[in-house]
Length: 319
Image (tube, rainbow, N blue to C red; front, top):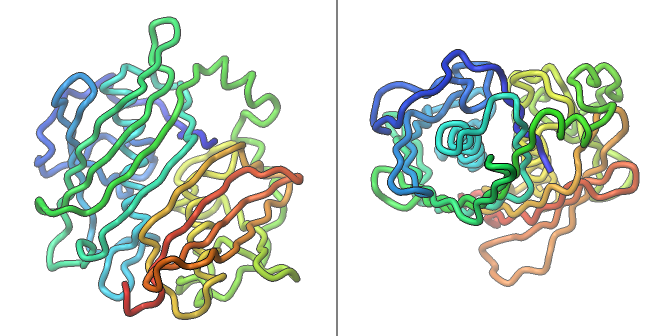
């Protein structure tokens, strides 16, 4: 599980807006502190539980960096993540201060649609929500299915399940860990792997630290990272765990890195700051020579906190 932390809004609400507008939605509705990190440009209700959301991808990004002239697949994951708080607040009337908890997430991406062009990529997300649950008249959980188009052509699909909890419920759930000040108890930041091993070019963006065991790394939790820790939180963010899964899969499959075209994840419990978290990767038997599947788990205090199956191309030629 992963809490999509919200902040106090500047506006109480914004109307449904044509997604082609040349602006971004207010940052509070996607739970970002930095306006530069907002990817969504507008939303439109098509039916009771059906929506269209616009997004724009910049030609480059400080963290989700293009590789070999193609967009970082996790930029798609972050785009979908931003739709969760947007629709929760604007379509399902979830108050600010409630906590959105990510339980399951998966995506598949068409690599042919990811080339960086001469202008930013205009993305259309067609979203259908199902299994919508309410408690005491207020939204409490749903499943979101996403079909993404780029300039009208298929880009990818995604599915997410998440729940919503009132502040009092969240405090009971989290206990002593339910305050961002717990970051002061974080374990010391471990040294990073060589960036080239995990498809990165800066040590600051490496989220794995080497250990003596093959296929096992320590998660590097760096609260100073300006993208993964855009604002204070009380646990390791979900996008940090997705990045750890991606880096572990690349480290496990060797130096001829491919693109992570698919990811299927389960968030079982929070990853806390005050004890080490171990990332383990196992390359699975291949059914298709063009694709590699790697199982990645995160364990903390001898309990599985997160698991993922990462699907990647076999090498750079397939990116």
